Length: 210
Image (cartoon, rainbow, N blue to C red; front, top):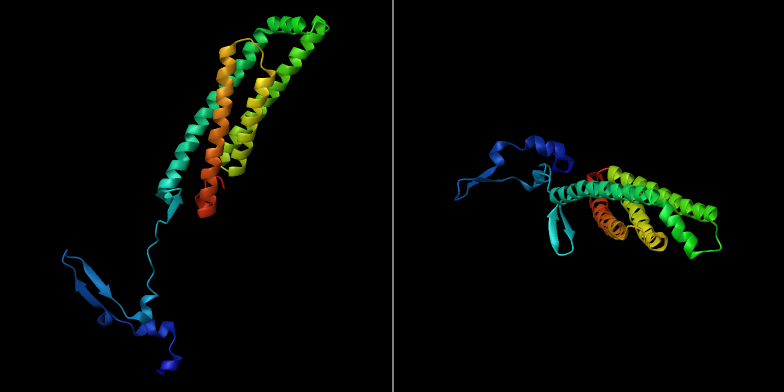
């Protein structure tokens, strides 16, 4: 065959076992040498590419396990936060008469009916917030998308600021616990958003729900 007419397929047909050079290593393993013409035709084994985060180095599998473990922890944290939100709302509703009286004392120009409407309006706003935050948390956990964690973190931050403005002096310990949980939710959501962005940029199919 004319060398100018040779194709990779014809070269591969002429390649045979006699062209392989085997070298025995001291540990008993064998190293094979093949002609350069067909070297590129040999399929290469997949390599587990590393993911660099700061100064640490994780393989994709290790990083994915870290992300999935934190997703599970986030689901437990979200359940705790939603439970605390529900207890807070129920506690405020059960103690509504004391809070209505406190509003009336602070703003004497308001009668008791007006004070009751103000209390119910504030409680309704907090209930709507709790439902919205729970929706964002469920979406973030179920999809694992960075933008949903961003929304969840924003909701937690807004809830923490609003809680300082709207919370009453009733059940102070529950107020403090809820405030700290919302701040923790904001930080944890940002952390998982960061991990999710790294995974989606490095290897999109590896991101759960992406």
